[in-house]
Image (cartoon, rainbow, N blue to C red; front, side, top):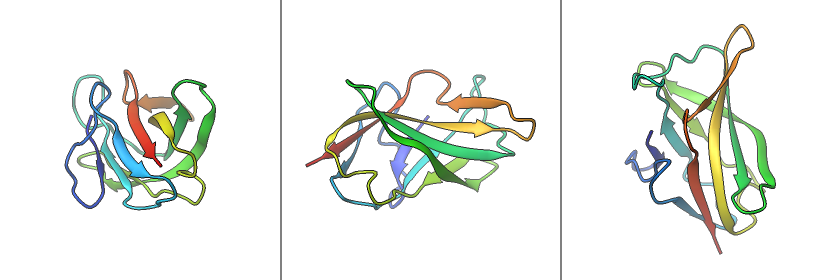
Length: 121
């Protein structure tokens, strides 16, 4: 369930790990994650993928449905490119990806917990 900055591809955050940090106002590097099914295999991801993020303490939604890109179907590697306004408020956030399959069924990743993102002043 690794989450990383695009430039390194290293897993720097997991649902139980330290948050991925990005500075206020930055839109790079992109956020990259490998999405796994509950059995631990790479998720099958035909359809659309969106990125969602909300503030941890207030639960205020910061990113309602940001478009994510499937980079590698064989590893279920997805990428979210930060947009202007995504990182304009310093706070702790929880984030996840929603996959909507071709029949309209939605599944969230990680399947348990959430990724942690820290936007630092």
